[in-house]
Image (cartoon, rainbow, N blue to C red; front, side, top):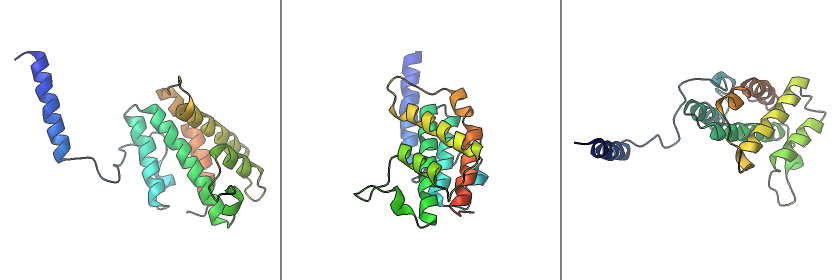
Length: 169
């Protein structure tokens, strides 16, 4: 048997195995906490926990743009959680009742005196938004491992503050 035939049979077998054993319906769990420490979100909301697994899992697999976009999503979701927990959700909605885009959410929370984010958290918020925006919206940009690794400290800064402000822990 030549190599091409063997590879073809291996691919067919992999497809058969995947068909009989698909990934978990609600997503899997990451095996490591490389980018966000799961303990920061454990016990908050199931969807926040799943986002943390997706951030770490996509990083583990080398899908760095996916990791950056999920980081962006986590930040956006946590800002909304903060406003909802404080009875202020209407302040971050447009005329149609939809939540604002991330750039506007960031501007609002940075300007809101009730949520006095620390200097490091403010800087982290801006860094995370910019990284997520590049991965989500730039045609030619692709994130690399070091780009995502460089976000881990920023992510910890802002997640810890936003979780506290949203009274999730």
